[in-house]
Length: 106
Image 1 (cartoon, rainbow, N blue to C red):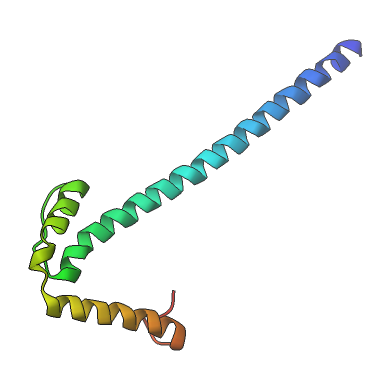
Image 2 (image 1 turned 180 degrees about the horizontal axis):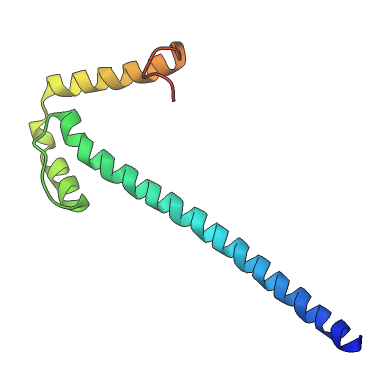
């Protein structure tokens, strides 16, 4: 009986270590999931901004597309930008004013 009793603190410590490791793993997973979601969102935004501003889009990675967008801002098509801004505003307003309209709910 004494041999079994002497392992109880060891087992308790082992279980505590496993539980804390699981908590750390869960925290790390949440953080990495948020990072991946933010990265995907930024990639989509940088890919869509030239279309919103009426600028010729570039091929390449994230930074090449972002640089092409920033350097091409002087060639913005005003009508394209106006239609894009009005469309985005309409989606935001409809989401709150008429949530039963298709495309306005989240």
